[in-house]
Length: 544
Image (spheres, one colour):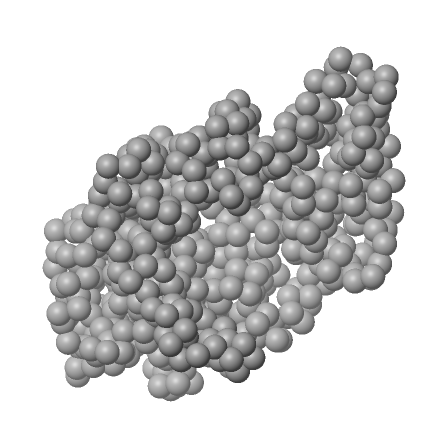
């Protein structure tokens, strides 16, 4: 199946999923399928044989469109190409030029360096990479570099000092020389000019904030600078004055991740000023749009707050029990999570969820979402989102589609290989939709049923979305011709040759491959907002 795909199709899969197989694993795919690494390298070798023309063309198109699920994938692929022993000097120079062109910030470039050095453990930076590092710093002015250093001392495990020394970067002006000297020695020149002192003041101010222990002083420094939470001493996180200053510096995603911490600090009470500020920031339409936050990021953090945090990792519990010898009572305390009652914050989060739906680019396709409703007591937590249950994930995804796409039909699997429609008004609140879906009875999932039902009812569907508890390959559907035949019959009967199917398996991650699956079927193991972005890219025909 993989060999029959064109180079264009395989490269698209790498760019959007970091996998050549027609399946996406939440987290690192190499953990689940060892053979993915060799498949990826084989495709990248073909890209080199093509002199990088097709790869660079696809990367440019994907970046221009926006909405790539994970930008770091692009830099990982470019790093792997750089480590290929068959890459010519000219190709390496063009790869480095592409890295510099695509790097929007320090994190992008340092991420590339991190991926490259991990692949070449123990090796110095070669000439091609060192030249790229020198160009990276040569494109910065002294003030930009000072702000970069002040913003973060290390990025992806690397510091500016590391790169400057390894690549032998030389300053291109007296002002840049002063910044370099301070990076390498942490000392000021005795004869430093006023201009040099003004630029270095940015770095000194960041160092002052990192050492500051007075909440009032820290709040003033935060208000008069671009610094944020990572610059603060841990002892200052208990100060309401500091939080009032720092919250304004944070993105919507960062605020969402801090809600549980703020609750534990007792800052989310209805009368709290911080609580009012959080609500204001989370319900600001312009701020939510600018952040690009995905609605399912909001939903995940909402459930995390409501449930009092995610469950403890079983491996950590085993370690604490066997190695640390914790008592049963202490282990029980660690495992306990208490539901949190913050109706005012939860209400703001639902408002944020609705606003974030505007950040999802519609595909303008017709959807049929079919959910396998689990029996009571078997609604397990999702891989990648340990505070979200399988059914919550399915309903939340359907709710987002209903708010974004013009035509979405929702159904559940029924006995006798049939479907039952769930009729709701749009947009239906997620909690109400969850109650309606949970109230239905389901008896296992059969993927071919979706096509036979849609054919019988003359339903014109562009994208079928299935949420199932267990891998269809275990029930034999992917090994038999049933799925392929049903899909082909539907495409022929309805004259819809481009119909696709997305199969979510949020609570499982099988190890065996799915080589016999049709190319228009994508399987997603686990569930998070990245997985949803992958599904949306697949539906928009960004890859197949």
